[in-house]
Length: 441
Image (tube, rainbow, N blue to C red):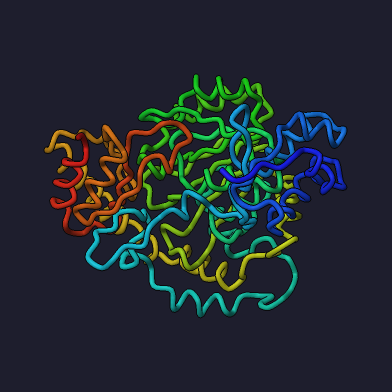
């Protein structure tokens, strides 16, 4: 590592001795190159002595810099300057590769563009909605509210349109959950949800799942740590393809009955799932937030999701959103409302659902024939067990096949790969042969 600095020298550079001040002024020294990458920082107790603050104050400041990946290391091994980048980056999503032509890319579990509704007529309608180009921070256009309410899983007090499902989760967490608190989330889960939680700086408490959804006993254990929120997918798990049974949802509600934990339901797969929409909102109306993304069913360029909750919670979310995009495009909301009212849209969604199921089942059956059993499920991907993730990734890459390692979807040790099937219209046998080789060394 690089040179070490003395605590007395470091203390002379720090004027603000609050937790925030120490973190900000240290980051400024790093950004200016006064503390280059590789510099070993003084021991926490030595800095605390020189600054005449408690060691806990320095530890908290260091935790913030460690969260930003500016410093690394801890304890007897010392702490070093490890980066000078101050722009947050979703590490799990950003580590995805760009693949050359000819590579069978099975990393993106998104919709097949050929199976999505055409948008021309819908967008033309959207351009005629009321209050177009107004700066009024409207929450949801009446037409979209009426369209989604018809199939909403409970009678909600308030609705809000957002710029996609992950935008909804990001906004909710920043509006309602403090950095340093805890959030319980199903294990495994979507990598972008983990990116959001890690960037916020919360403690992630994994909740184990089985073939019916999150396990009640695991959720009960997680609640002992008093998490600020429980975030889960109430309909179809986007990674494993498991649909949450209605009885399991009721059991989760029983566990949550005696807590005050915020309940965040992320229905990210939406109507691509054959399972009916469901929610704990009817049971816990004052603290449930239900999110429905329209990206998988209507198309990602609509950038649209709708959330519901109690009026006070929606007020808080909207207040936070007012710092940036105060509303979601009325054109896109109007287009989505038009699509949701059109019977042809639902016919297309049903046809797409069947094709996605056929593609998923085809690869699952092919893997089963090769000795790799895959549980029944739905959705746009497979969660495939492997003996070694690194071996599996290298083996598949050598055969020009790209998948995601399971560790992107977990904060616990993982022995899986996630294989997208939504666009796997051919080359299924080729993929199955390669995955069988990658399954075990």
